[in-house]
Image (cartoon, rainbow, N blue to C red; front, side):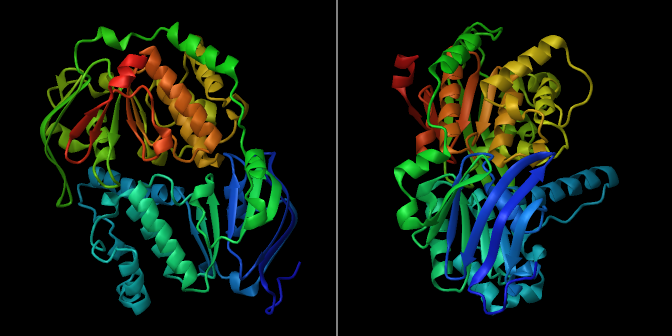
Length: 505
């Protein structure tokens, strides 16, 4: 079918669009006309098809039914900007390859910076300079991209899209992982861009409160189908929002989860007298930037803690020090289960006792395997599934798949899942080995409101069961855990105790 005419008022028109992935229909009967003067939001739960629509528009995947007609100005790749959660993972994966090449060849590889990502000519343009200042990135152009905070990453990816002057900008969950200040700054930045340019916007989100006032129209998706679409003023009603997410909590499932955890073969964390983590006068630097200065902390046995701080304050670095993924853990005074890093301890024996869910793990897990095999890989702490596991281990894995409501999609390709679905599989992967400590770095990132609530309830039950010690990182106020006994604030190390947690549990 021919493209839209030059004088068309629409950027594109979809009629009856359907998408099939791995033999399964994941999107169907989508009718959507997008006028140039409009700004749209797409709402829906995990796996609803929100990102799939964007991938169709970006010509990353094909549709099996229907028609899609574009305005001629959208035919060029540069005229369609797209910012999504997997972009930092893809760029950082390239940096990981450099590390491996450096290890094998002995040749020092140059660190990727904002400046090296773009030509000097491109950065010298007045529009580029103005954008960098607007985004507060002008002082960071020579900083390695690995050292960027979540908020800085979002701005960098937005800059990468805007520098090509797109007509239409697509943002897929741009606020996930941002602290309150960074989220507010990013929202203000978006508003200024929309108000002072001819840019049209598509904003994908799980959350109504993330929609900027300039959004004119809203589409709601559920299970790959359009529930509604139209003007924001008439669409954003409580009944419409409830259609998109499962809101019922099955009490029987909650009791089943709790009872199975308590009678499982977990140890009781209160039996241990040795702190799982102890740090003394830690100094941590990255590319000339101080992350920690004279930082000391002891994680008492039997307690669940939260790590708080703004983007870039060192929360994820703390997790890397514990796991042993940061080399400076071996040059500092860091003890894990009473054994000092660098004293000849067996790193793999220690890792068997630690469950981890982090954005970095999700970045590294780019294997073309099913969700079920991702969970199986947790028994060996491998990226990818290699070799067989016992029948008892399979039974344990299937139990965790059921606990997180993942059984129905367990045979789907992990890489074709939504960001939030991947996060749930990685949590199940962490739990199969019955870890003594569980490190959760933004575990709810990418989850819709229903799944957030369910996951928080289940993590709280884990905490109540005293089966594992939890170290929890989250920016969202509503994602707070009742079982948390204390919070450490970074980078200064200030501690606040929560005595009510001990009274409850």
